[in-house]
Image (cartoon, rainbow, N blue to C red; front, side, top):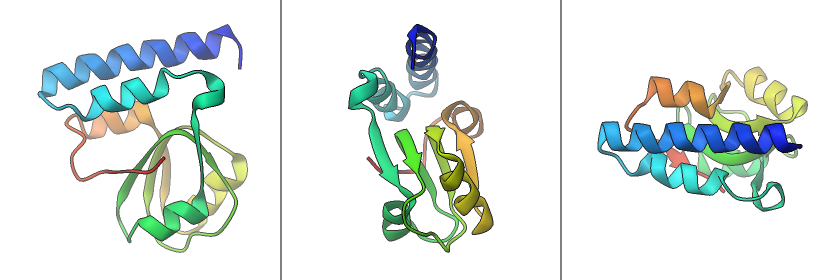
Length: 118
């Protein structure tokens, strides 16, 4: 992850802060703080953990990386900075969706009815 990735995360964090102010919601401001951390400090969450804490049709936010260890059987929408190929595949095979944080921000400007894992 080079300078471009850090710049990308910084730009996204600024967009999230703007969304937090516009929607009068602290959710996106909190996520912005979490993704501004150094690369080594970003959370890594396995889909097995998501499966333990999420129910069918939940929306889950991972302010970091989703990895493919474990299994998931419930259709869950997962938004994260990054997904491993195996994590994305397993989420989609279970009938869920793997989307970017930007996509979720457009869909859910207030960040309501979302579980943060990580």
